[in-house]
Length: 228
Image 1 (cartoon, rainbow, N blue to C red):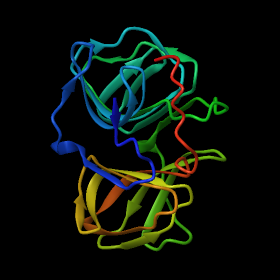
Image 2: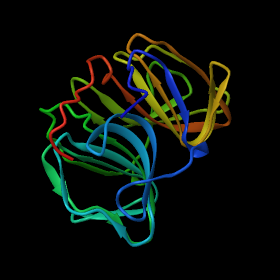
Image 3: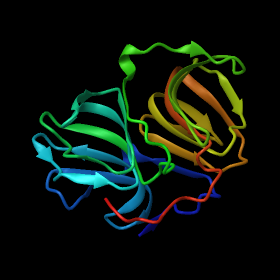
Image 4: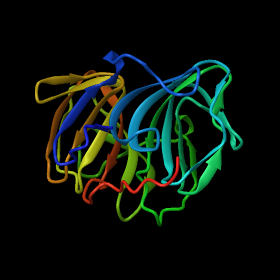
């Protein structure tokens, strides 16, 4: 399966408007944003766990990165409420599930194979700092390597954002909204811009809180899939 697999093109998906698609595991559904592969895939998705649902134990051969959007996600490493940001590096293993139910934004098979950092951050307990070169923008860093930077940003109401992120960028709206190319991005809207693109947007009347990843689209996607 290939979905939004041309990483040289701009892609916008308003995930809150998509139907939920059943996964092979009962009680777990997803809204796919991009994908190369079948059940083992390089994928970006929003995944919903029904109450008491659980995956079987599995290894992430290509790593797993996720942000809990609502509810509580759980595995052997603990309970992760809304706002938790987690990176499980390549070859990590767990048995994920949720007792109350949850929704996560998740990226699979998108790690640099040398990135073995385990990251577990409760973003609700962290503070923002002002971006030095972008007025009206506050930043909460989450993870950074030579090849990528991940953060949550807050954009002031009606703030105009013009930025040329190195190596491409992805944006997921967590709350609030912004307009880009006359297109309105609200909660759970996702935008991917290729390397070399310039981002020009205006935050809405309530501002916006946005998950942002940059730098990772400078290299061709790694799609040699040998595990889940």
